[in-house]
Length: 130
Image (cartoon, rainbow, N blue to C red; front, top):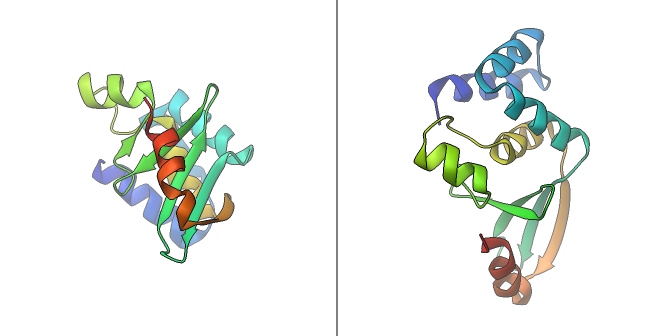
């Protein structure tokens, strides 16, 4: 991810809110991606699954058509936009799902679920489908 987004996220984390300046920077940098991410956060479709007793954490963002897995420290998403516009075309450094996860986590606006470890393989198989 770009240094710019890291700085914006760090500032939001310190303040506990999105300032007007941060809002302006996010809109300028991400445009519609930011608005979609903010909508996802406000609609509470960002989910944090903690598997027990291992403590393994998985982040999922529910999109229009299915749920998307965010992994590898926010550098990967299973959505088509990530594969096409982030990986192949390099039009952006994040998809809106990754941006939503980042914002939801720092603003503490996400759902939490505790799931038994025995369910991990089946759930990961479902989430990893592209």
